[in-house]
Image (cartoon, rainbow, N blue to C red; front, side, top):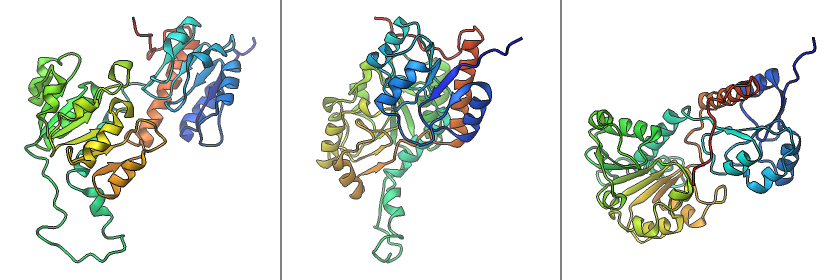
Length: 333
């Protein structure tokens, strides 16, 4: 009896070795040697021949690319939770299933969110650069490198999903008062656990918080959710942290408000036009007004392996004739 033909799985980025090795064992997996994004031409070639495409959040899988897909392409198994760069409706029209990797990066992202929440008010990046710098450290001083205490401050969470909730649990342990804005109010038991205050009005919450943490997904509805008008509602001594997606914040407006002293600072792991970075942000970082990270909030080896396992499970379920556990459906209009 002939062995069952393995699906051709084209992977668009280099993945951790354990993930790539397992994919080679299970599938006819085509790996990419260089750790770089595929060009548009390479993506077109991939969708023309693959049974499964495994893109990442850096790949744009739009309607034009999906129109180039060959008859064999039946599954886009995204290596990542965010699918904002995949035209899911266009895929559905072509009979292509889309999956993602939810629920594996919650704790890692919440850890980094908390790290940024500490780094900005406590001036950790500035302090870390003192000793390796050119100037000699003159020693401890009662008035030097003063930051702001976290305990007793109000934290406003924009998006109380899995990550927002994990951030809230960490922040409560640091003595922060938890407030949140969400499309829907969370269960009473969770509010009681966190002693959290729900704000139906995002505007009203922004105006009253010491720190804002952005933890909602990137969708058409959340593009520039924190607009110039809304950012201007924040207090001059307040800080904002974003480990979600860059386009949720009007970056130009945020920069201007920090430059003008109308917001105290920001901790950012994501950017509106990444990997391109606004040069004004770099200048603010040099002045200690912002802490900038290179989109690394989910970057743990354990997390990336968990993501790979999710991708593998989705592919195996699909080709075994079952509904993949992490199928993403088009939004209803």
